[in-house]
Image (tube, rainbow, N blue to C red; front, side, top):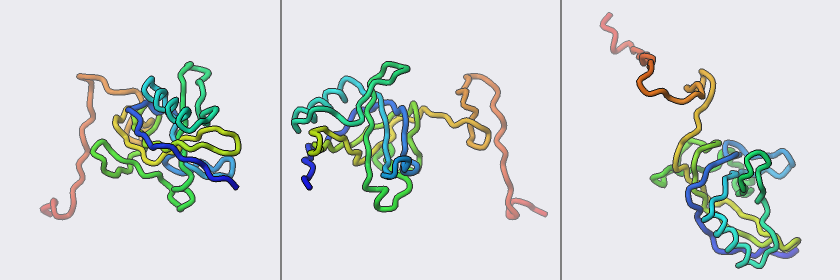
Length: 172
């Protein structure tokens, strides 16, 4: 069995998330892994091209064009955390501290990536080492999640905050 040849790790610039499997591993095809798919910017494309040429690969795994939008997308994967039994992939906030907030579609993230030349077909896979949530744009829908999914309206009606009292607050 031949070993993969790893390239130099790099950190992407802030990119828009299209899809993520960070809350729990994707196990649809029997190989559980965490992943994030982002829109490829010109700078990220340069990083991908540099990794491909530096490793001597013939293609990038996980790189595709979205049929609806025409955008170039790339998927970064990590199987190691799922193998370790982690349900949620570790997320960092803008201050480089761990957070439980999961990036979803329209959020912006930076990803630390390690490229690897896959010896069986001379392709390059891009492995996600870390992910940092830089900008939160996704709004959950439904009343139980705290948002209606329609966005804010400046100057509009805002419901009063309901406060709860404890026995210590009650004089009776």
